[in-house]
Length: 103
Image (cartoon, rainbow, N blue to C red; front, top):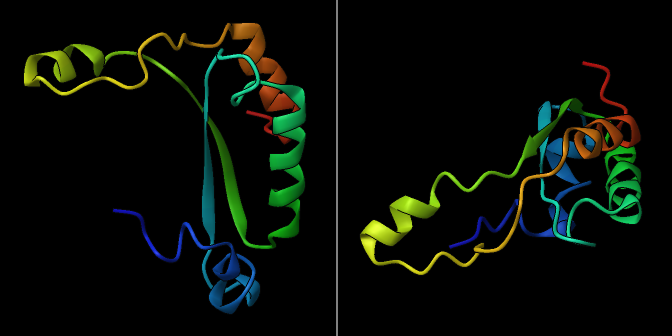
């Protein structure tokens, strides 16, 4: 089930968000899958979107990991992210630079 507010672009720059009432943190899960989340183009698009919002308190990069794969297998649930690999340290550094993360 998806949140009708978080996944509805019409609510992103209206209401509380537009009025800077609620601060938010943007978490970007970074993978090494070509063109998925690690491409410079995708990161530039995300940066442009974040720059439209005036209430972003923090932007974080969350490097993808496959630690949950074992749990899914034990539960008999298909792991749909199989084959994705974590980004390289250089890829994380590049993403942070594009997104303006200084930490």
